[in-house]
Amino acid sequence: MPRRASGVTGGWKRVMDCKQAKSMLSTYLDGAVSGHEMRGISAHLQNCGPCNNSYASLQRTQALLSSIGTRKAPTDLPLRLKIAIQQERSRSAARTLQNIGLRIEHAINSFMLPATAGLTTAVIMFGVLIGFFARPEVANDIPTSLYTPPRLSAGPYEIQGIDGPVLIEASVDSSGRVLDYRILSGHDSDAVRVKIDNALIFTTFEPARAFGAPASGHVVLAFSTVNVKG
Image (tube, rainbow, N blue to C red):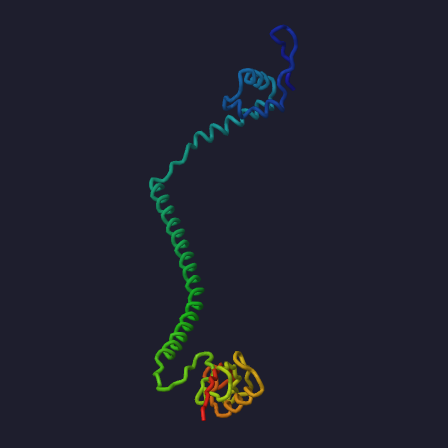
């Protein structure tokens, strides 16, 4: 046990205990303590055998480590480090190129299917347009647009015994026959309608065309008057 030592002023003062001293032995050995702490530890080691033995053990360990010295690095260490760094860079570059290649391949695969479908559609449309524009013209050919109205083939445009011209709209079936009509302008009477009915009997039409096939439709006709003098 540490003994008590008298202070400078003649009073008694407790010296540093074992717990405090052992916690500071390593820093005391390295000289990393203050002057006050150094004096306290030195006084404790002089009066405490166990702590003095611990300090002596630390001194021997330090001396042993100092005798071993620092292991020298291999002379080719810089070359080895350069080679290792270069190899790691090469592997990183290879992985980067591989990832870029996979992304490009994925993008191409995603693009090819829509592009193929678009090319097929373009070829089909081109063929349709070529067939449309390259059709030879035939004499007296009927236009085959979406819809063409009926066309008058033959019929009287003049009716005797009516007052002024009469404008009618006639409904023509797919066979070219008049189904019904209505007077748009001009004199409207039973006598006029009888004359128009008789005139339409001798009137023939080319039926309307829808996509090239016969269809029903409407046509506007104008009848004028003729005065016959006996």
